[in-house]
Amino acid sequence: MKNTEFNAYFNRVSDTLGRIDISTIDRLVELLLKARENGNTIFIFGNGGSGATASHVTGDFLKGISYGLDKRFRIQCLNDNISGMMAISNDLSYDEVFVEQLKAFVKEKDIVIGISGSGNSANVVKAMELARTKGAVTVAFCGFRGGKIKDMADLSIHVPVNDMEVTEDIHVIIFHAIKQAIMKTLKGENCSMGTTYDERVK
Picture 1 (cartoon, rainbow, N blue to C red):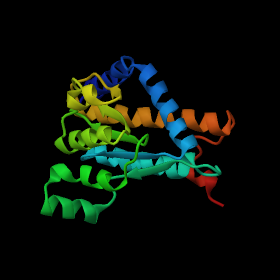
Picture 2 (cartoon, rainbow, N blue to C red; picture 1 turned 60 degrees about the horizontal axis):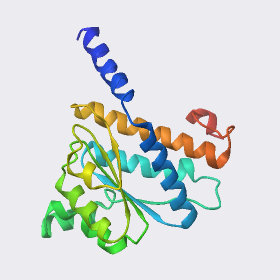
Picture 3 (cartoon, rainbow, N blue to C red; picture 1 turned 90 degrees about the vertical axis):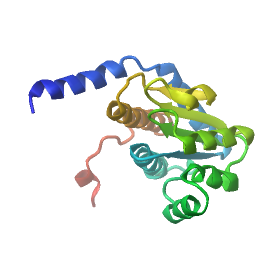
Picture 4 (cartoon, helix red, strand yellow; picture 1 turned 30 degrees about the horizontal axis):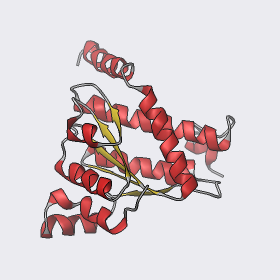
């Protein structure tokens, strides 16, 4: 494969990052810190690569950010209950896998983060609709033109590019930037970030 193809991809990621509305990310950090302070739960979910991102983010909040804090983030990834998802998919519909879980748990002022590259994943849309009726704060992570969730969410983090891989890459980058911003806010400028695994092993 020619180097120009790699350069084109990396340039597309870089160019797209430059078109992200940073103010929306700053607003999300405020919402997340407020949820922690008030003891609200953060629910996060998506399909495929977006589902993997949701699970990754949950791990970052549960361990990376919350470690050492007396007051921790309450966060739940709706992708991680595999048996529940399979039962709902088999007995009802895959469109219901997230909304059925939210019906059991979501409360007013919780934060519900739906991740969908296209913004049109039916199961994500249905969950976001339910969250709004329950008085939760809805946050959309999307790409392309934003799809349905961009317009229906209280806050949208939109990656303006017609490329699923670049969209997914940048969603992860944004969440990692949020992680470091929150860690600095809660633990100070000298908090341990970017430490290698070997350096942490005792």
